[in-house]
Structures are given as C-alpha cells and as structure tokens.
Image 1 (spheres, rainbow, N blue to C red):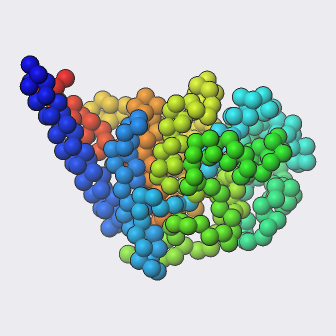
Image 2: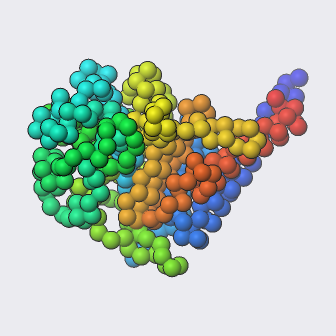
Image 3: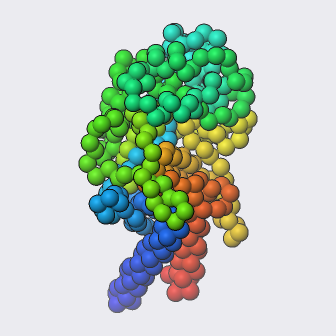
Length: 375
C-alpha cells in the first residue's frame, strides 16, 4: 500500500513538472510570435492563486544598447495607475473621509462651480463625469512644472461647460483621475505619491513600484518604442509626470502580482468595499470604479468574470487582468506601443490568446488526470 501511495505521488510530481514545462513553452511561444509581428515586447506573468504558472519576457528593454527585457525589468504601467487611485479613494471612503455620492465641490472648493456641484466622486472613478475633454496634446508633451499643480490644471484645462450630464455615459478622460488624485491630496493633506506609499506600496512591500518624475533616473526602467513598417522606433517625448494619478506609475511583474494577491485577500480594503469597487455600473455596462468588469465565455462552456485595467502611453502598453472566481492573474508589462493587448473582450489579440491557452491547458490537465485515475 505504501509503495502504491509513493508511486502515485511520484507520478503526480512528474506530471506537474512536465505540465509546467509544457505551459512555459506554450506561453513563451505566444510571446515570441507576437514579438515577431511587432505586436508585443515586454514581460508576462500568469498565475492562479499564489502559484505562478508562467513568467517570461521577450524583446529589448533598450535597443540602443541591446539590453533584453527581463522578468524583473521595470515598466511604466500607464493607466493601471487609475486602479491604484481608485483603491486610495475607496480606502478613504472606508475611513469615512470621502463619500462616493458627494459632489466634488465638497472636497475641492476652488474647482469651477458650474462643474463641481453636479459631478460626484463616483462619477470620476467611472470615467463618467462629463468634464471638458482633457486629451489636449500640449498637456502631455510639455515639460512645465505648473502642469503638475492641480489648481493650474483646473484654470487652464478643466474649464467650460459639462459635455453631458454626469453619470449618464462613459467618456474616457484623464482629467477624471487627476481630479480624484487632487481630492486624495486635499483630504489627506499629503501628496498623492506620499499617500500611495503609505497606504499601499509600503504595507505590501512593493519596493519596485513608484511614481515617475521628469528627469529622474529609475534603475532598470525599460525604454519605450513604436513599431511601424517592420521596424522599431523610439517613442516621441511624453511628459509622464504630468499624468500623475491618471498614469505616471511604474512597476514590475512581481510587484503587480503582490498587488493582485492583496486584492484577492482583501488586505487593503474590506470585502464589501472591494466588491463595490469591482462592480460594473448597470447603466454604463462594463465600467466599474477604476476598472472594466465583464464576462468572457469560451466555446467549451467555461466562463470567466474578468476585471481588467488597461494602460497605454506612447511606447508602453500594459494590462492587468484578474478573476476573483479563479484567483487568476494575467499581467502584461510591455515597452512597445500596441493595441493587441486590449481586445480581450472581443476574443482577439495576445491577451485573449493567453487566456485561451490557460483555459485549454486547464481542460487538458483535468482530462489527463481522469485518464490516469488521479481524480
């Protein structure tokens, strides 16, 4: 009997090792194929619960010096920053310092009155404020210290009339999350970066994550590139610091995995408020507080409820996909401008192919175990 148990355990271990090796090859092939087509350059982590199924990288972090991307390279995470901003707001909601349904004039008395009395904090986090369009090219390409000061931003860019009734429709606008960052600073009396460090990064031990400042040298930070006509080119200049609480963070695969696990275990926020943060608006469809939430079904009948946060600025494309039901994490941190990551919901692109491979591998493993009578 003991020999049989020992033999069974050995078989399980060998199957697991072989399975992990096959997984690694399959996921790496996906990355390599995407790289050859100019659709991706960067790092990928796939995990279920605490178990990392795959961690790998492809392409170059610096093409001038032929330095490869590594699994511990740092990347700009762009609008994944918004997921952190939403968490900080929700933590302050839990502490009773912010109310989601209060107008933003409650917290920002100097904000233009014709705008701030109608817009709620919740409208900001759902990209449904109706604020004047903030995608002004000069704002993102001008290195001017005033553009990091919210009072100057409001006077210069957030002026005019509402585009639509707040809360009535989705309209992607970085101004929403810069305004949310300003509320965080006003309520706490600290800078956004200080609050981010104190309430998220330090408690979780995310030592390779932070905010980008213009001119700062960040060790192991990848450079950004654009792929065009079969060649890679350096990205144009972007004043990343100006993106602030809407998109100026950098991170690594391991740190982002720490972040996801903290979300799964409710380390940063109660279960009730975490669920509120990741519940899509019935009116807006897929839009939740700082993330998109939707169901994705496969032909085999498998369905995932996904929470997704995208990020793209210039030569960097990032994506964080999680599933609470599966305790699933898929983290892309890339340094080439591409849209191939952002079509998961349409069942297209590298992110969907990664999820499909994960689903196929899961089904294959279950069938293999059944054949061998292991479950």
